[in-house]
Length: 417
Image (cartoon, rainbow, N blue to C red):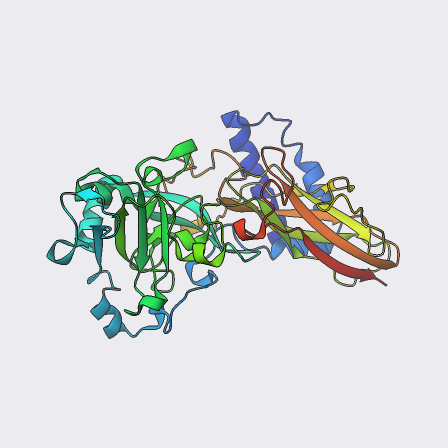
């Protein structure tokens, strides 16, 4: 095994096992002796190579995939225009107002000369800043756009400055859209989610940093919303307006496109390294990523079948197939993302003072996995992989509907020749 791969895997396993055994989150037996883990990797140099190519757990800010909207896209504006329209830290202002059509009662709207500024946001950050990990995923795309540590101030801290008193049921918000109404992209949520963080979730934030760096314009800077448990369309970029409303239903832009606008992140997986013209009876290395959604991640499983084998008509999600457990990689010693030495900064939600996770895989984030298949005779085959969440639900359940978030079981066809 190459020295760099051996070092990566050795540290990856040792640091995580030491942390979880010490914290009591798992028994010593839960992480079996590293020999089983290492022996699988020693078997095949191609698996070593595939593991060595895995991206770091945190994505570099510049490496996030982009699905921005707008003509032109706001981050494509020149610096002078960005300054003019408030898309720099020096000129950014946020209006927090009552909905004219469904008014909430507030005493102090933040608008015009009283609009909320970036300097005021930084004042709040001195006492209220939080940071947490989150995978950013598009509702209708089958792969994460990137995984990061997001930093900001809870939106409720600004909402309270308007002094609301009654008739406030929902909050909707939107970002800069070239001053053209047909380009506006809007999201919303119940006000209760902003005021309170259920089930141990991080707060909804006005975000200004990603992986310790100021948000770039392409990532939605100077300020965007980040909703921890939600798909990316809830985390509006280039935020300019927050509207406090007595409306009773969601009025997101995505609602008009037949999307489930209140569906939280799902647990699902896909491959990164798939079979590529393997030879008969040779081990086949497989690697991939998994998204740990709102219900967490318990297992990743793999199933290889003969391509022409009949599939049961009454089992569309292959629940009776002979799935095999893959190995989920433990927490890394180098989280990447541009942090010095790949270390998680202190006071990050979900991590202890030493930068180790309280649980793994982390909810609302991603993990990596691998499986070494022992080999196949010549023929045509299909590879599938799936997740099992912490409630025992196998992908694509419990929410298999496409418009509530991608969770389709990936299908890869290959041939052993």
